[in-house]
Amino acid sequence: MGSDAGGAGPAEVEPMPGYWELITRGAGVMLDEWRRCSDCGAELSKRTLLETAYITWTEIALFFFCAFLWTMIRKGLTESLFKPLAQWCRLLPKDAAKMPESAWKLVFYTMSWSYSTYLLFFSSYSFFHDPPSVFYNWKSGMTVPTDIAIAYLIQGSFYGHSIYATVNMDTWRKDSAVMVVHHIITLALISFSYAFRYHNVGILVLFLHDINDVQLEFTKLNVYLKSRGGGYHLLNDVLSNMGSVSFSITWFWFRLYWFPLKVLYATCVSSIQSVPNIPFYFFFNALLLALLLMNIYWFLFIVIFVVKLLKVKEVNDVREYEDEDARRAAEELLKHPQAESNGDGDDDDAGHHNSAQRKHVQNGVAKDKYL
View (cartoon, rainbow, N blue to C red):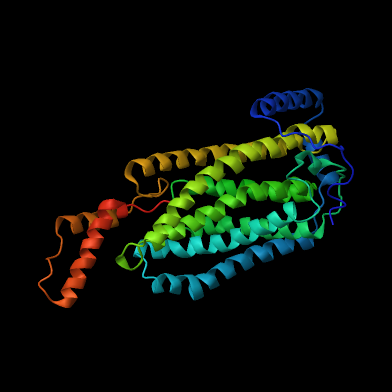
């Protein structure tokens, strides 16, 4: 395992560069490549595509089958497990509507990130500690190790499913259009990196991104659960706040620090050093840079969220559209609270419940929760 992925390379591991080195060396190498590429154009791209892209009809059929399978599995789990669980937990209606989405994504991303973690840290691959090694002994049409091919099939088909799911199954948010673009770019990276045998760097990209999705969906679920049954649950509130802090830190660390300095440096600089005239150099780096820009875009949401959390100490999603009906209902509840308890036991319970509802609304329930 890993014989086709790494092979012989430099004896010493190169130190990870800094941002300035990435910008200066990356820009310099890309500019030199652009100047040398005198015959670049559609004809060269077509010829390179036909000569170096390797993917079979069987692999394409497996992709579509697995994408359909993910959709069916999600629907099955939603109806048989997630929705009944939301009802059993007595979630607020708007939280119960979004809980199955988060539960499904938490299950998938936990599985996928665990597998990529296994490949990078518990097998013979050294891509994380030595990113330039992703291009050592690269050959057009080289065999993809089975364990990496499985990861690609899982991830590629999931993102194929996710394009459909974002439009037709998920809650629509302010950044959902960007999310669709993100899924398309990710699917393009997965598909083309597999076809051109850049699978080693692909595993590193997936590892650096999936960890944030695990934390995001975990935090969302705890936000929903802290208000279950019309009450307040301290443990879930603490877990949601811890998840929010962890998510914010790891987003910067994995996507804005390690991703550019490990992945982009390897694809911009190390790739040319190991494989001169590497196919579709500009195309792949343009996709990775677009992914970095989207990570920066979403990080702005995170910064706004953190500032909001520090000011009002309530976890609200700055990406969510405000539900006008819920807002008006909340205002009516605040303006016309039900009568106080008159001594009857049931009325005491109802009064206590309404008081809790009013307090919860005042704390920001009229708006959808963050995460």
